[in-house]
Image (cartoon, rainbow, N blue to C red):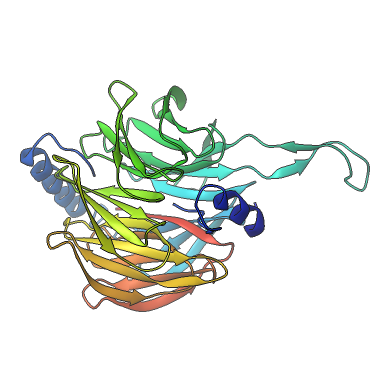
Length: 371
């Protein structure tokens, strides 16, 4: 999908001809669940420190590139290890909880079908799909057809399900990861896009770009429970591990909505122009908001929000069209895709400064990292 086509599509969803193609734990049963999650994560990190032969496992982060590829990057060297070519525009990528595979949403391209030797003839649109690849070998494990214009994919924490938002169909596809079968389709609000799933794997909080709400989808009943009104053109969400606080980027208001899930009271914090993705760090202390702007007038920053005080504490200069954002499992780094200059910024969390910028060709969009 070309940038021109992409900007036209998004302009129909968001007022004012914004280019926003983007996009990446919520409700908990109690503080004990949150504490167990932290303990399990610390134990997993400890177990992953070394292999049996004494070597340390390689940590990778992945970028979804709209030009038709996925970049696999060594987090120790910030060098591209491999490029997975994909037939279509890759919108979002996510690492599975077990660290063995990634899932990626692919928006179809129009492809020639039949016709003469010069390629003239009937055009045929490919099926929208999610692709699953092995992290170890980059091998394609499975291809699953989903709805129109798939946006984000997120795995439940227990690894049993993968959820995909279908932006044009106003619903989500639920995939059983044991069989790779589609087990449910759940209606949402208009233009579902970025989202996160609670640490207990029971609820998905889905930003509806075409309206001012977040859909709360119950993954036990496979039904939309309610919609929370958050503000204009929410793009993606994040949820704290204790399940008490929801955040959503408001592209139409240049703000981050911070929602008390017990009362549904919303506080709005000003951020940069055209916020896209948001990511809550490992300690639930800060939310990092990537400010994209538009292709004609790109933003180039990440706003750091202190969730306790509900205030912006820093504005970090990155690259043009900052879009996808993720923090490292050790809580030391932040990785940001810059769509309009084909780069990734690596930020030192303690210093709140970019320490390195690497080139990633093909319009990097979503981003995800292994534990």
